[in-house]
Image (cartoon, rainbow, N blue to C red; front, side, top):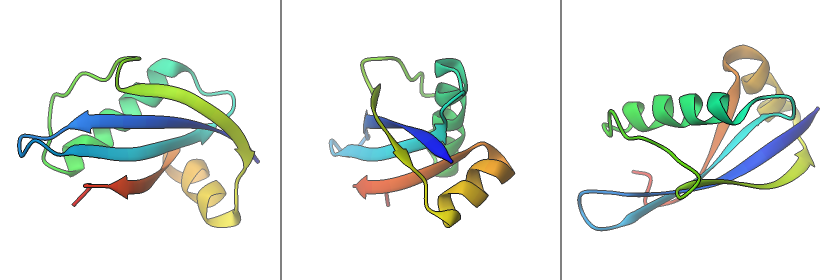
Length: 86
């Protein structure tokens, strides 16, 4: 499965920047990506954050490993936590 990778940076109340990648099926819309990002942020107790192209940008496409593909088939996306996500 080919996936699109969106590089995402969100400021936290602590002043740190949360950095994570949102991986989606290559046919997903940008609105879908933002919805998935908001869902992930809500799971991290950052509700109602409005993602835009300032925080979340298309980075590249790649072939997904099976774990990522399974997650995308199940819930539409996969998150790779990079920095300050906990």
